[in-house]
Amino acid sequence: MSTVKEKYGFVPTSVLHFGKTKNLTRGFLGNQEWRKENTDNSSSSSMSEFNPDLCKFIIEYWSNTNDLIIDPYHGWGTRAVMSKQLKRNYKGFDISKETNTDVKKMLDTNREQAKWFSNETVNIQVIHGDGVKLEGIESDSADLVFSCPPYFNIEKYESCEGQLSDINNYSLFMDLMLKAAKRQLEVLKENKYVVMVVGDWRVDGELLMFSKDMVDTYIKAGFIVHDFVIHKLNSAAIVGCGNFDDKNFVTKSHEYVLVFKKVTDKKSINTMSNVTKEQTTLKDDFSSLRKEFPGIPDSSLKKIMEQREE
Image (tube, rainbow, N blue to C red; front, side, top):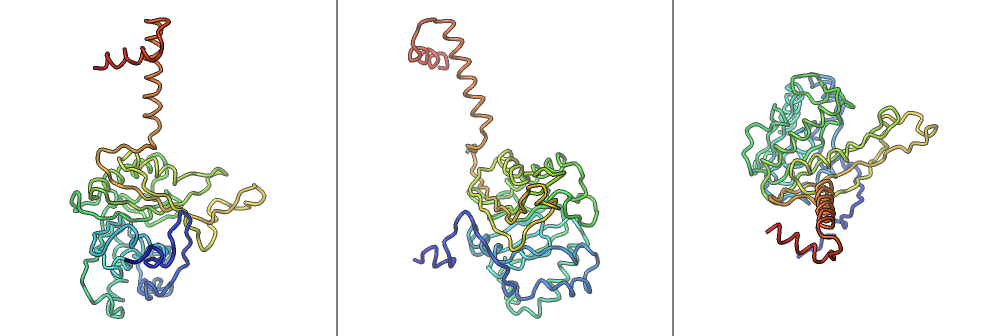
């Protein structure tokens, strides 16, 4: 049996760095020139490409061969291509009809050139649909939910009904993230994982902790926090960081790989508000008993509490 290092070529730690190895996707995603000449809208032609090396690691580490991966926000198709390479079934969603059409065109155009894609041992689908709703996906059917969600309205995509980047109210945006997380809990199999790759950004000089909000959202939806990985970017993220040195900011050179697990009937230990409430209730009960039975030791008061609970 191979060791972890032999299997992945390194020992996975909580801080990782992956370069972008273009031959992982074998030119299948098309370059910028191909996109400008062959896509129907500017958003597709300028859409950022998800790091294929990071994608490969996540798929291999948190899923198995022939598993079904659900991608609520498929973007330019990196996760679709890597799922195919790694022999996983894949269903990706995009709310934009134009983006979905462009990605399908890219996949079909390059299908003949990529011999590896001709071996149809797994099913790869890119679907025009709402990634929040995941219509057509059965409950308890997915082995991994894996995506990079929209960063609120930081990166604009073409406007259409249901487009998350059209929302200008952050609270409303996070409400939809919660709705999406609850739906992902439904479609995911027991003891399987959701992996979301996210980052933070600045608004009016203050750091908006999207990563924290996403953790809180998935806990509220019913997941437990399984892992939390820092991934070092290949270039610094400069959104909202103009003149950062004058303002004593540091440029963000990392993103987060948030890993959640579906474990039915287990409440996350990170819901500290519930713990605090229970502790407060316990203290209130003790205070009431002390007034009712002055001078009695706490050990005796505890027995009285237990008897009353029975």
